[in-house]
Image 1 (cartoon, rainbow, N blue to C red):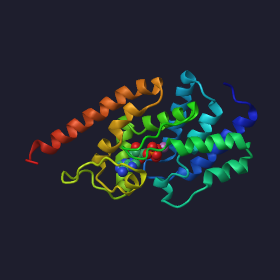
Image 2 (cartoon, rainbow, N blue to C red):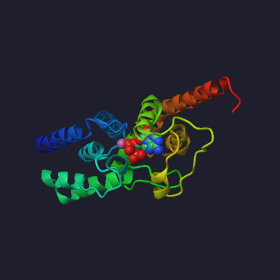
Image 3 (cartoon, rainbow, N blue to C red):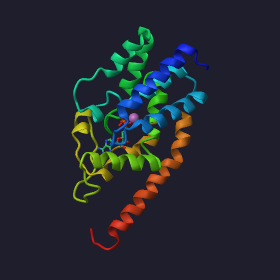
Image 4 (cartoon, rainbow, N blue to C red):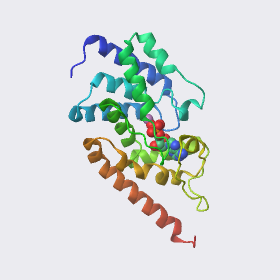
Length: 220
Ligand code: ADP
Ligand code: NI
């Protein structure tokens, strides 16, 4: 679907807004994460359908108000930005709803998006959480929060609600078992599932090698 000039302007200024906001993020949620998610989302939308303007806007704005970046404070930055742009109520509502539905909220929490656009953006965000890039982002996030790489005494947890997931302070390796390895079976679209296969395999190989080295010269 071709964007008209007005929509193109809106996307462009949103890109500038997000770029400037997340330029210096060191937690794996920097501008380039947004850039990759936007491109993946548009690629998925090409085969799966969905309104490409809504998909692109939601992908660009999906992490702006996220609790992992802003802390836990109440945030309305996306809403304010859309107001400033003057997007109509229905479009703004759709974009805000997608963003609300995208985020992972714990292994035990079902989060199935309600619209094709939300399914696509969630899949794109999840694809960027796995594979080689996912591994890099996860350790960047862990480092930014002062987490250990691994501690054999702390076991992964199955978080039954969002509050428990948010409180989690475990070592970064545990995040693979608490979230990353679960993602391939929680994707919404066939296109994303196909892209996920290689990425998932790569994480499995990484973990196998990590533990092989870990146990190489010791008993635990
Ligand atoms: P979501 O909102 O679905 O979690 P994001 O785009 O905000 O998706 O990115 C989440 C990424 O942040 C994870 O894939 C991981 O790289 C990192 N992350 C989040 N929580 C943790 C954690 N507890 N330990 C390590 N990395 C984490
Ligand atoms: Ni994201």
